[in-house]
Amino acid sequence: MTPDPAVDDIVHRHAKAIVSMDIGQIMNDLMPEAMMKLQQEAGGGTALQINDYEVLGSSQDGDDYLYDVKYIGPESFTVRARWSRVGSEWKIVDADITARE
Image 1: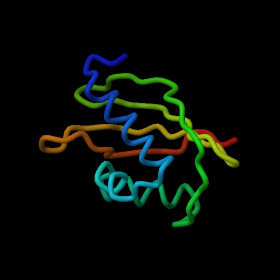
Image 2: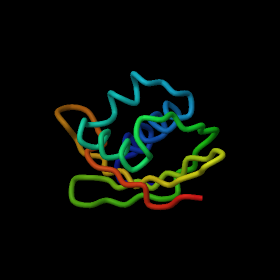
Image 3: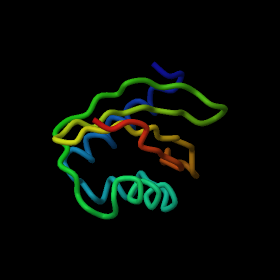
Image 4: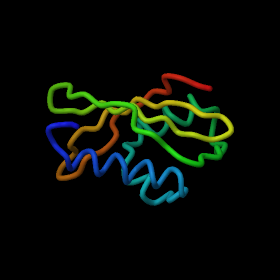
């Protein structure tokens, strides 16, 4: 568990938004640069079927937190997201797809 349990809750909220395709919440959590990067890595703007998720791990990097989350579906993949405080909110400022199954 990270030193800031609020970040854990936000990561789970974001992952649940991905599973349920809550576009408003997803867009709110992602900074524009991170969103564009993930769209390019995922193959454009095509929607992927995601049935579930699993938080694989987390670590602190300065004031930021890195989370590895596996999104489970017909084509599963793992994302490492950098969460930073932007104003009063936690946002994903960078993300990479680190594994595909």
